[in-house]
Image 1: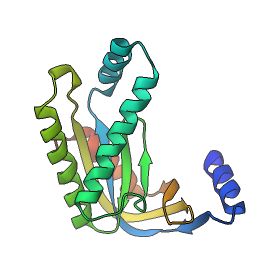
Image 2 (image 1 turned 60 degrees about the vertical axis):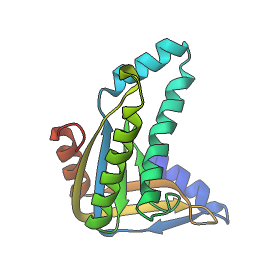
Image 3 (image 1 turned 90 degrees about the vertical axis):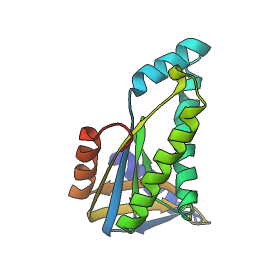
Image 4 (image 1 turned 180 degrees about the horizontal axis):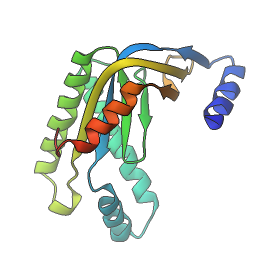
Length: 168
């Protein structure tokens, strides 16, 4: 919280950045890369370079942004909060959340079909709807640069994600 407040304060002092309250009823999508530790270890050990794990994280987030685009959403303006091996995504409607989740799974299935076994990865997804206190820092063009959120819907989405089976 202190880090977010420091970032928000710093950004708010710059004329091109805005702190926006987007609180309200929304769908929260919790995504987690299954066996991420093993995948990250394989990447780092294969390339003998820890920066390749960071690239893996960027690729995972890139796949999530691609799924948002397929749903007709602009990934620059959707609050997406990376969690290290996944993300929390905040969407206005349950329909958008389900469409996004299906897009993630469809893309994952397509990509994994062409990958060797050790490079495949799978995602667990949980979705919950409810009130969320959401603050978003955006830059001059509306792109989300930081997210701070709270609410039971987040907790429920994460708990559902942890108990679901791979691929859903």
